Length: 167
Image (cartoon, rainbow, N blue to C red; front, side, top):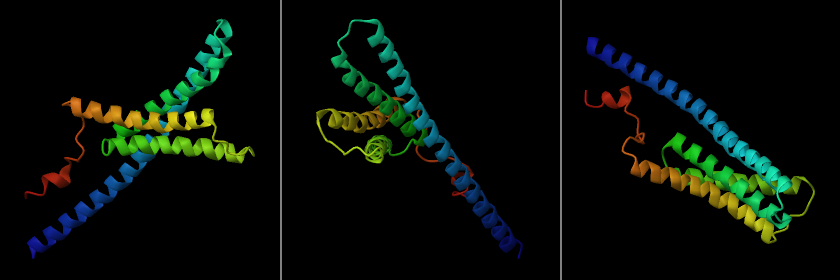
Protein backbone atom coordinates (compact mmCIF):
# COMPACT_ATOMS: atom_id res chain seq x y z
CA UNK A 1 0.00 0.00 0.00
CA UNK A 2 2.77 2.40 0.96
CA UNK A 3 4.74 1.52 -2.18
CA UNK A 4 1.70 2.18 -4.39
CA UNK A 5 1.12 5.60 -2.78
CA UNK A 6 4.81 6.38 -3.10
CA UNK A 7 4.78 5.50 -6.83
CA UNK A 8 1.63 7.55 -7.39
CA UNK A 9 3.05 10.59 -5.64
CA UNK A 10 6.34 10.14 -7.49
CA UNK A 11 4.50 9.98 -10.82
CA UNK A 12 2.48 13.05 -9.87
CA UNK A 13 5.66 14.89 -8.93
CA UNK A 14 7.30 13.96 -12.25
CA UNK A 15 4.26 15.04 -14.27
CA UNK A 16 4.08 18.38 -12.46
CA UNK A 17 7.82 18.83 -13.05
CA UNK A 18 7.36 18.11 -16.76
CA UNK A 19 4.59 20.72 -16.98
CA UNK A 20 6.79 23.31 -15.30
CA UNK A 21 9.70 22.48 -17.62
CA UNK A 22 7.52 22.77 -20.71
CA UNK A 23 6.05 26.10 -19.69
CA UNK A 24 9.50 27.39 -18.76
CA UNK A 25 10.99 26.30 -22.10
CA UNK A 26 8.08 27.88 -23.97
CA UNK A 27 8.78 31.22 -22.31
CA UNK A 28 12.48 30.71 -22.94
CA UNK A 29 11.80 30.10 -26.64
CA UNK A 30 9.65 33.23 -26.93
CA UNK A 31 12.34 35.33 -25.27
CA UNK A 32 14.99 33.73 -27.46
CA UNK A 33 13.07 34.53 -30.65
CA UNK A 34 12.62 38.14 -29.58
CA UNK A 35 16.29 38.41 -28.61
CA UNK A 36 17.39 36.89 -31.92
CA UNK A 37 15.16 39.21 -33.93
CA UNK A 38 16.25 42.25 -31.93
CA UNK A 39 19.95 41.44 -32.30
CA UNK A 40 19.66 40.93 -36.04
CA UNK A 41 17.53 43.98 -36.77
CA UNK A 42 19.48 46.17 -34.34
CA UNK A 43 22.77 45.20 -35.94
CA UNK A 44 21.42 45.89 -39.42
CA UNK A 45 20.12 49.31 -38.33
CA UNK A 46 23.47 50.23 -36.76
CA UNK A 47 25.31 49.14 -39.91
CA UNK A 48 22.87 51.15 -42.06
CA UNK A 49 23.61 54.23 -39.95
CA UNK A 50 27.36 53.61 -40.16
CA UNK A 51 27.17 53.18 -43.94
CA UNK A 52 25.13 56.38 -44.24
CA UNK A 53 27.78 58.30 -42.31
CA UNK A 54 30.54 56.81 -44.44
CA UNK A 55 28.78 57.71 -47.69
CA UNK A 56 27.94 61.20 -46.41
CA UNK A 57 31.48 62.08 -45.38
CA UNK A 58 33.58 60.37 -48.03
CA UNK A 59 33.81 60.50 -51.78
CA UNK A 60 32.66 56.89 -52.27
CA UNK A 61 30.57 56.22 -55.32
CA UNK A 62 26.84 56.04 -54.64
CA UNK A 63 26.74 52.87 -56.72
CA UNK A 64 28.04 51.12 -53.61
CA UNK A 65 24.95 51.98 -51.53
CA UNK A 66 22.98 48.89 -52.57
CA UNK A 67 25.84 46.45 -51.92
CA UNK A 68 26.48 48.12 -48.55
CA UNK A 69 22.81 47.77 -47.62
CA UNK A 70 22.86 44.14 -48.73
CA UNK A 71 25.95 43.46 -46.62
CA UNK A 72 24.39 45.19 -43.60
CA UNK A 73 21.30 43.02 -43.86
CA UNK A 74 23.41 39.88 -44.29
CA UNK A 75 25.46 40.63 -41.15
CA UNK A 76 22.24 41.17 -39.21
CA UNK A 77 20.86 37.84 -40.45
CA UNK A 78 24.12 36.06 -39.52
CA UNK A 79 23.97 37.45 -35.99
CA UNK A 80 20.28 36.61 -35.65
CA UNK A 81 20.85 33.03 -36.82
CA UNK A 82 23.83 32.69 -34.49
CA UNK A 83 21.89 33.93 -31.45
CA UNK A 84 18.93 31.64 -32.13
CA UNK A 85 21.04 28.56 -32.88
CA UNK A 86 23.22 29.08 -29.79
CA UNK A 87 20.15 29.60 -27.62
CA UNK A 88 18.35 26.47 -28.77
CA UNK A 89 21.56 24.40 -29.00
CA UNK A 90 19.89 21.70 -31.10
CA UNK A 91 19.52 21.47 -34.86
CA UNK A 92 21.64 24.58 -35.26
CA UNK A 93 21.71 24.56 -39.05
CA UNK A 94 17.93 24.29 -39.18
CA UNK A 95 17.69 27.28 -36.82
CA UNK A 96 19.90 29.33 -39.12
CA UNK A 97 17.99 28.36 -42.25
CA UNK A 98 14.72 29.17 -40.46
CA UNK A 99 15.98 32.64 -39.60
CA UNK A 100 17.01 33.25 -43.20
CA UNK A 101 13.66 32.06 -44.55
CA UNK A 102 11.81 34.19 -41.98
CA UNK A 103 13.66 37.36 -42.99
CA UNK A 104 13.22 36.61 -46.70
CA UNK A 105 9.48 36.09 -46.15
CA UNK A 106 9.29 39.32 -44.15
CA UNK A 107 10.96 41.22 -46.99
CA UNK A 108 8.62 39.70 -49.58
CA UNK A 109 5.56 40.34 -47.42
CA UNK A 110 6.43 43.98 -46.75
CA UNK A 111 7.03 44.52 -50.46
CA UNK A 112 3.66 42.97 -51.29
CA UNK A 113 1.87 44.99 -48.56
CA UNK A 114 3.38 48.23 -49.80
CA UNK A 115 1.45 47.84 -53.04
CA UNK A 116 4.53 47.44 -55.18
CA UNK A 117 4.79 44.40 -57.44
CA UNK A 118 7.27 41.69 -56.50
CA UNK A 119 10.08 42.23 -59.00
CA UNK A 120 12.82 39.63 -58.99
CA UNK A 121 15.66 41.59 -60.54
CA UNK A 122 19.32 41.17 -59.63
CA UNK A 123 19.13 43.60 -56.69
CA UNK A 124 16.11 41.98 -55.02
CA UNK A 125 17.42 38.47 -55.63
CA UNK A 126 20.76 39.46 -54.11
CA UNK A 127 18.98 40.82 -51.03
CA UNK A 128 16.88 37.66 -50.65
CA UNK A 129 19.99 35.51 -51.09
CA UNK A 130 21.87 37.61 -48.51
CA UNK A 131 19.07 37.05 -46.01
CA UNK A 132 18.82 33.31 -46.68
CA UNK A 133 22.55 32.68 -46.69
CA UNK A 134 23.15 35.06 -43.78
CA UNK A 135 20.79 33.17 -41.50
CA UNK A 136 22.22 29.86 -42.67
CA UNK A 137 25.75 31.11 -42.05
CA UNK A 138 24.75 31.99 -38.48
CA UNK A 139 23.54 28.44 -37.94
CA UNK A 140 26.72 27.03 -39.46
CA UNK A 141 28.93 29.24 -37.28
CA UNK A 142 26.99 28.11 -34.24
CA UNK A 143 27.37 24.45 -35.19
CA UNK A 144 31.09 24.87 -35.85
CA UNK A 145 31.53 26.64 -32.54
CA UNK A 146 29.71 23.83 -30.74
CA UNK A 147 31.86 21.18 -32.42
CA UNK A 148 35.11 22.98 -31.66
CA UNK A 149 34.15 23.96 -28.11
CA UNK A 150 34.35 21.17 -25.55
CA UNK A 151 32.48 23.34 -23.03
CA UNK A 152 29.45 23.73 -25.31
CA UNK A 153 26.09 23.18 -23.71
CA UNK A 154 24.88 19.59 -24.21
CA UNK A 155 21.87 19.03 -26.45
CA UNK A 156 20.00 17.01 -23.81
CA UNK A 157 19.00 17.96 -20.31
CA UNK A 158 20.67 16.44 -17.30
CA UNK A 159 17.90 17.48 -14.92
CA UNK A 160 16.19 15.46 -12.19
CA UNK A 161 14.17 13.36 -14.64
CA UNK A 162 17.31 11.86 -16.16
CA UNK A 163 18.82 11.19 -12.75
CA UNK A 164 15.73 9.17 -11.74
CA UNK A 165 15.94 6.75 -14.67
CA UNK A 166 18.39 4.47 -12.90
CA UNK A 167 16.42 4.34 -9.66
